[in-house]
Picture 1 (cartoon, helix red, strand yellow):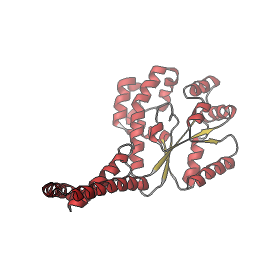
Picture 2: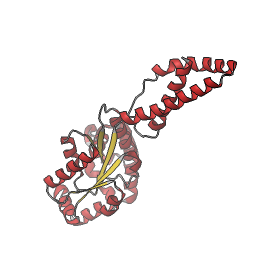
Picture 3: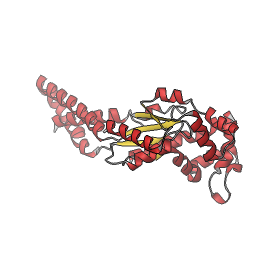
Picture 4: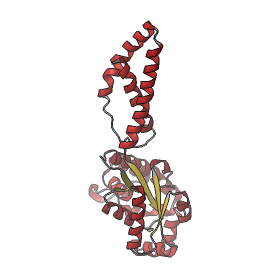
Length: 274
């Protein structure tokens, strides 16, 4: 029991060493199974080793602790879900890539949907937004935030920064929570338009950037959101250039062509991952 306590303690510390470096606690450890030998065995063993003055006891305990430490690290790495952050300029095609990944069986989280849920029903977000922007941005009869009334932030840098300071921590927390609930999934993906702008690089094991030609991006944005040329420029100016995002990424997917072209590119990347 005393010797096993050192192996258990090493395993737990190795597991937590890597787990604490990850933002999402993706793997849970049954701590009760380790408490008995650690709590009861370690003091007894240390007393015996000290009383007997046994060098062998110290060496064996050290070896078991080191072995447990490495085993804990390995266990964590083999059982956690690795996360892909997918970003790109607005209207570049992130949602299409997310749809293809979902079709291939990967769990996909769209932060746009997370924001929509928070604006609709999160009391903490509502309170912070009401304090900052007033009641004018709320829908009648408790219907949440009127997102159209928040569009003015694209023309007000201070208001945009304040809005992001309220939303980004909550979105990050919600994504971590959803990832932590995944069971048995080797990979998951999160669609994050402002991944680099928000400094979220360390949240992900890989970062993919979806790009498209400037003309295609502008045409898609005007058609989808019914924006004027001036409004399109404001939206694009609020994000990093495509070239900068591509430079910082692990993989780049070009979505300038057809849907089939993009699907083939995504499947090729998945084949490498698998």
